[in-house]
Length: 262
Length: 74
Image (cartoon, rainbow over all chains, first blue to last red; front, side):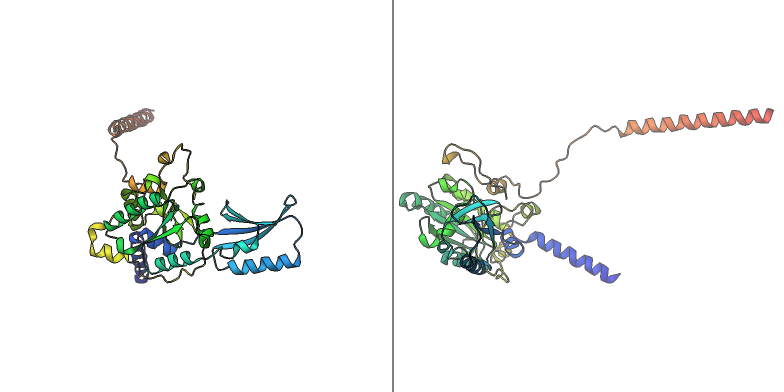
């Protein structure tokens, strides 16, 4: 009977701990990234060479949150690859050469390493190349962070929308919501957990108040309401998410209990 | 997750992301149950049930005693 009580006590302690874990940390430790599917659409039977090529692509992308499938449809004249996130169509590639950096890129590696080092999140500022527009948002972000007690655990990175080396990453970010590709202004994405990108702030939405709310969202206790309906889109990336460093936000909150919020 | 985007005319009118408005409005945490006063009829119900039980018992005892008395006289 004593061991039964001990089990109950341990379970209660575990549950109470789980409820005080911050959103960013909980998502990094517990969620599985959403799965992408790369589909090879073709109209005729696959030749030996194509099967070999597809097997090689499938092997290359295997470590990422993606699976490879082939679909034969009579109405397809030219074969192509389609990238899907769940049932959302993200991109079309006519040439297998376009897939070479699909699952990884230098900036994605940098962001993942920041998250794994215990940072709260990475704020990714997607710029347009129009210096006036970009500078306004940059100024707001700097001001918001300079006043935040969490500034040391947040990394800001910039990405130009036209960066050819990050084209896949930009494409995925612009697919987080279905109208983003048609919006020309700069955008601010909060990236946390296992590369989850929140729906971005853009236009006048890039304000100090909203950046502060984004930080509040990530530093709040992870309620079941958030767990059951996590916002954002997981970005395609090859990474081992096991054993991240301890979340730095916890030491800030321990030293300043007044910053705790729910 | 279902995307948040809805129709809008200009970028200034584009709605803010749902996670942001929920955070702003405090909807990411459980809201305390709102207490509302309701009409209390329990006392009336209690009186009615008690009265009904008393009447039933009196009726039962009356019938029982009358039958017993009748039996004894015969």
